[in-house]
Image (cartoon, rainbow, N blue to C red; front, side):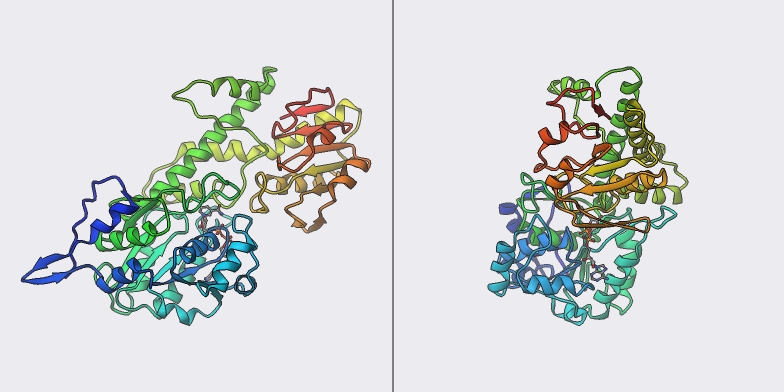
Length: 465
Ligand SMILES: NC(=O)c1ccc[n+]([C@@H]2O[C@H](COP(=O)([O-])OP(=O)(O)OC[C@H]3O[C@@H](n4cnc5c(N)ncnc54)[C@H](O)[C@@H]3O)[C@@H](O)[C@H]2O)c1
């Protein structure tokens, strides 16, 4: 029998408090603890941790577990990733090759494609992609495949945690039945929890270690075990009452961002019509010390989270007959921004009596946000495609993205020095990378600035969003 000595109403447990949550219970003179051997192995850092999916989320997490002293095995279907890990070479900007090589050399982290090794893991974190289908429905095929691999070797007292962002109900409706197929029961024979990943790539202030981790299990034993595990590697763990709450927490966070970005993009369009500088308006508004949080307009949403996650929520809500109006509206406004940027490029070219058709347009930055190499869902991809469709001759510079394929075209980055010296009809700041020399960009003949990166330079040749 398992004990459940945790007060689930308590809002959070910090690392030092986590040791209290597994106090043994004495029943009929027998001392019991939930999954006692697993708990002991986590506490003594002897637990073998498996991380499935070694991308932007999985690799930083695997490195944190390894740095905390656990024996970590990273699993990926793409053999290039385990190979690079084993060679101590990082492919994720937030993880340096030096820190990766240190844990690999110490024997604390290894990469593999061999899923049969999952059976020897004490705890398994699933960090695989959760994209949308073309129809904007959730595509859980990566999660299902990873879960089936775990199910094939699942054993008593293993802890399985899903981290991939998904709709409420995924863990208990999709993951749990697949894991229970061979007779073991969740929260009784093995432990199952959901814990959303909140990492913000490129953010040096908040990292995997310093961002509080929300944890919800299919039962109290699962919540406790997952909280204990994360307590070893993150500064603070917040327990919630179920996997569904934990799943919804992440979707609330990302829907909040998507809707607020949609609002500020609409305000930007409005300000343009009213001949107001939206950036000046936001800068002044954010001096209010309460009740306001600044969001910034831009060429559209990008990355594997904000453009996708809200549609996981609206899809699930629709199953219950509920229409998420805010999500759909924000999606429309944010989705229209690349078209609007192209119209601004048209305005800029028109001011010097040139059409888009046949003009040379050069994009500075194609990554979805500053200082990252991720182009998934990047609005720059839409810009490239829309400009090509209108007959522009398009090129780009992005030190983080050497090569790009979009709409059947292949581009390679032009070095910055070459780009600012070569003839160009219109430059576009699509991503405000730190290492661009904005003074040089501001000196170009015609620039459309979608990120307010040229705010220090006021010239008629610079067109703001
Ligand atoms: N990138 C972010 O900023 C971020 C932030 C928070 C949450 N998330 C969420 O985390 C999850 C992972 O995102 P990511 O950005 O790390 O994705 P990613 O594409 O960078 O990495 C996913 C990895 O999983 C591997 N993979 C796919 N199927 C597999 C399988 N069956 N078995 C083993 N490996 C498999 C892929 O080869 C890839 O290396 C998603 O649900 C995403 O929404 C991402």
